Image 1: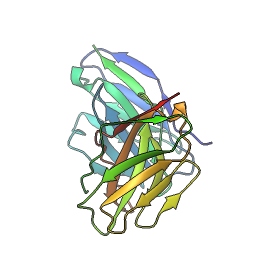
Image 2: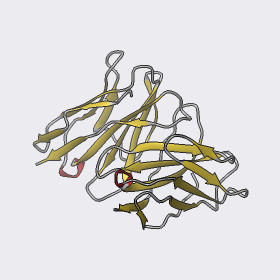
Image 3: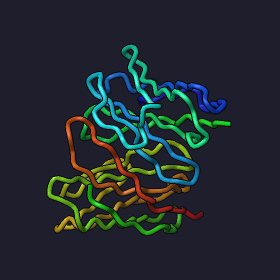
Image 4: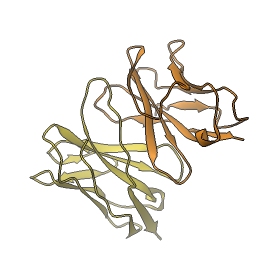
Length: 113
Length: 112
């Protein structure tokens, strides 16, 4: 069964450093998403991406965050200057249509120290 | 998107049907009901969705009441691997892929 692949599975970074979280969505999917989950809290929406542009973003997704689809297969989330409160599990997801179910990756655990 | 209400936890015996309820009394006519689950810090997993008709797939059945104010997800023969947090989400379908708003969900524990 097709999977969404995320790398790395765990990343530790110093506060103030830039991080890039990588995702390879399912190959024929057209819609891409990032969500995050702080330990013990709900899964939160960050951003959706379609047709090479952001289609929706949450209030969490401020100027420190950016997304990119640099080629036909990767979808990245960049955090420019990490804060302690950015420590969370980050999930990438993709879907073929805007209406169907999403396929989530297994996540990247980001720890900011 | 309409707010949903789910019980915080439920137990089920292995091999029995698990019936997970969800209230969405403020649902609008163009909002669908989606179910996802999350097994211990893994990525959420899509289960099923529907508008007003009952739906069934290889994982589960979704029963939506005629007034659409509530629904039930049925796992017909629960296994230990079905232990997870189950989320009922209501949202409008949009062509640009709108957000999923996760609540607290129901922690389902399947017991041997």
